[in-house]
Image (cartoon, rainbow, N blue to C red; front, side, top):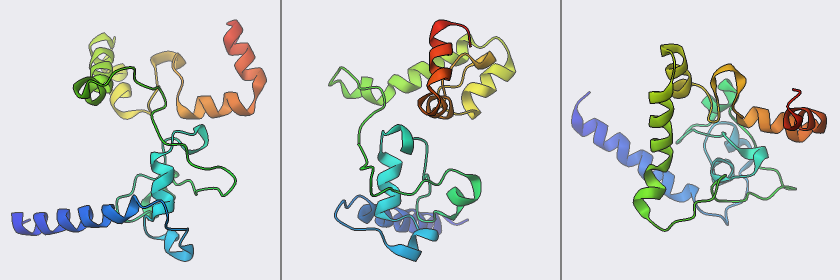
Length: 156
């Protein structure tokens, strides 16, 4: 593809992203079935457990719907913005690269190619042999308190 076309497409995508960060725009009804809207993008940035790992589309949201990563914004649950694990520094380099450093450490410690690929391709929080906590694990624990109790006592 010619570089000029790539540049035009990237520019369109960037301009589209601009309005998605407006918090005053309400839900847009049927448009939300096809397009990424401010409502769906608020969910993408939310740190609420109910909203984690969702709504990745830049312009179109149909792929999130197809692949099961779409979560609608709920009127009864405002989006809470921020990081799931807060940082305790103002160092921009640390903030930007801390997760990359963690991923790199996991890759170096991987005992097999399969484990390394798991760290790269599986959900955040994944660990070999089920030792981690993915968003889905955390949601199950929140829904089923006995799962959380068994896991914390070392019996589950």
